[in-house]
Length: 325
Image (cartoon, rainbow, N blue to C red; front, side, top):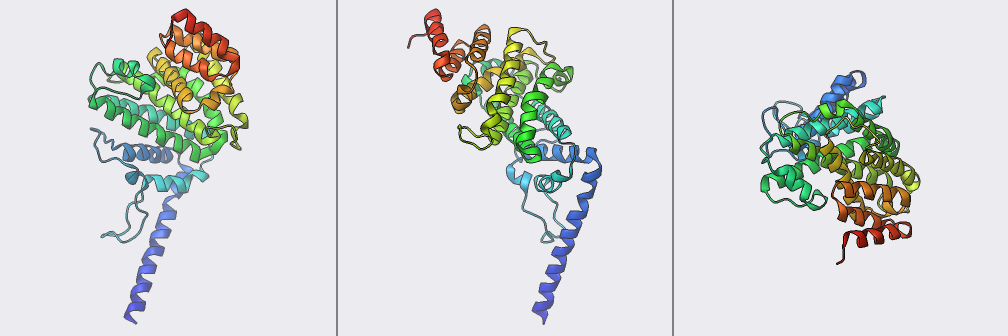
């Protein structure tokens, strides 16, 4: 009888935890500020960011936790922000608002990471490193690891919140609007100068590539890859116009330059099928813009991935610049 009573007590506690957990979700259905705070908690727990410093305690474990229950002394265990967001995001009606907030929090995280003690020459090291993936100093490498983690989290949250439709809207509308608005620049204002601007461009490039990968995959047989060429062409048209000076940017030029260079480099290296689907004339425009930014090798790599239509331009670039290997 004692054993049965003990089992019923445990079951009652778990039901109590379950009811408390679901009741706590109500506030997120009616209060957008609470949703923003929940998203902020997802970033701070994953990156280990506190109001005063960045610690090494952030992790995916901190984001997702270990469930909930009364096995903690003193009552119900705190619910991890990631699990809570997975439970409540379907009730949030304004998904475009979610995208803008995720983007804003990503840039805020970059600023916090950059102001945590990077050396002053870090921006130059980032600019010279191929695709932003090799770094000379430990502090810079650690910062880049955190930036990639923040971008991965942001892309995951966007995908969970709205799936492929939200990703398409992000790449076609939200990101171009961010680059041309003064608000985008203001999100990166703070300590760090060029380092913040460069890290911001890197974070956005990684964020964009991951969002696209979630929506389209990396090959040509994904069920959702049908709109890939259309969305990607629109985005690359915007970037080419920015490099040509036809679009007035509200953000720092170093942010836009880092974004274009890293995104194109990652596409050429990781998603070559995407590049093959882009119009050859657009690839030529992009390559000319990259050359003006002294990224001649990246321009050649882009043309080389473009297929037959861009091979003539690639050959001309090799001859013109003497890029014989």
